[in-house]
Image 1 (cartoon, rainbow, N blue to C red):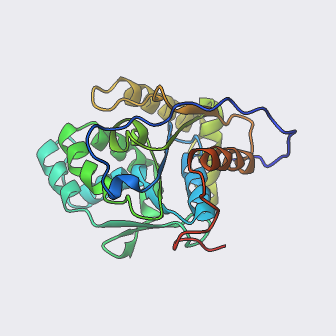
Image 2 (image 1 turned 120 degrees about the vertical axis):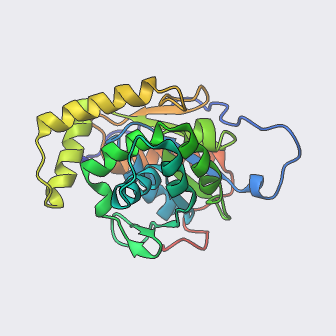
Image 3 (image 1 turned 90 degrees about the vertical axis):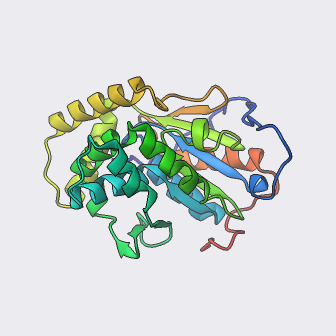
Length: 265
């Protein structure tokens, strides 16, 4: 659970070069600003990404939810999580959309159906981690994720947003926290949704998922060299959001909160 508390004005790290430009002419789509937030499960990146997207009035991409949707859809269709070609076919036909402004946690829509609660189970999370390990699935979702890049801007959260999907993102943040705290946060979230799970088992599963995500050969979980790393252990969500918004103001001059068509301020 995030703890909300006030602190003195911290000294933020000096500005980093967060722009890994691709070669070739700049296209209009490449001019759309992207803020990429990566990190392990339970680090709070989803909560922070939604809050930042709302404040900026930008579009939202929850990459982890996209993989969860693939996992849930595959299980519902009886597709084995070991069948790479079949999983890639499921991913390629996915019709998902994110609404950052529907309630405190937003909504995830699959073919117009709200699957927000269904994809947040631990079973869906475990399936997503296995699904994401398949190269064909990741290839099928790369362009689908890049299609979320629309004006006035995009806040994308996941595990490889800054390294693979949007390497030219104007701001990259790697958000992490101690595994014990991440497990407690996820445990409290699940309890609030009426899902009973052991904290010890959750902590063990999360540590195993961290290991698997870090060691996989395809897009392993790690901070980009040009990302700002932020450890949220013991820090309230409001403070984390404030810090990211401060970095965004420096990375994207002229961008004001709520100026885009997605804004609700």
